[in-house]
Length: 394
Picture 1 (cartoon, rainbow, N blue to C red):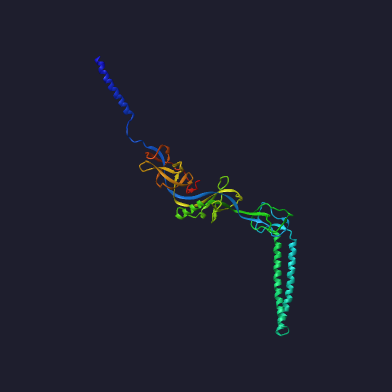
Picture 2: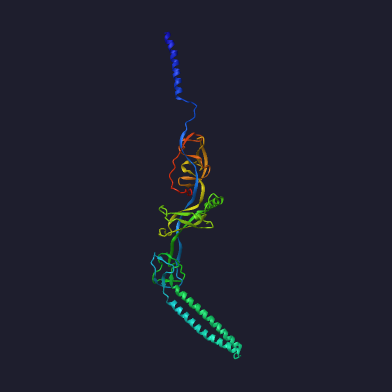
């Protein structure tokens, strides 16, 4: 019995020691710091950036001429092919000109009569001037002869003007193309009666090479752009930068354009400023009225800072932030301000600096103050020698 009483205390001590040993084994290194979390980061760099803006627009002909008759009459003949190309000065319609030819003949006859009268008046004036020196005629008669000569000269000048006017009117009977370009359908046929300066055009000629693209940009964007140029944030002239045209199917038009015109006033109805881009159209691919999108250059930034879009978070209020890895490999949440998209990156306006590391992979594993083990993310290959191009964020 004594042996059993001695064994029980020893067994209890052994069990207590075993339990204490298990607790120490379950919590090794109690009180030590949490292990560093592996993340991928990108080191920010500055570089040149062409800032651009994409705007919708319509293609319009660079020159448009509506053909209208300047005299009335019956259309005797149409001298062009509808939908074809015409040259400036080419005959388009012939109006019956019998009446106008008769008017020219009459005007020339009037001129001939005035010239004959002039010959007689000149002879009388010359004779009278000689006779008045010998007092053979009165001075009053000489004055009358000289006045008759002056009147005859004026009649000849008026008759010549009448001939010119009649010939001009006769020329209007043949309607010619005022510009070169592509002509549309004819609104009249042979035998139709037309009148001078009628409201309905006989046909319309459009010059489609070069082509114009009409755009509209909001006045707020124009104001911000002018401020950026005034502050020196943007360099270069928008007119000197090429304009890329995107077709309806999304493909890039082969010929770059240039900004040719910017309206000096804001349309009060739309709050926008009208822009015009001139685009070569040698193949006639662009047609008037075609919907296109134009990517216009706004300026150049020499020291633009870009951050990957996946590194920037946006909260419900719309504020943006990024996780920055400090020199001690600690995570710091930094508020940032971005303005526009540049491919898969944002253009940074404030909050980040060149040389800083931002987390791009493993964002969900860390928070402010977390210790991390950063590795540089693999950069995506870019075209050799190509500068980034910025487009406005929507």
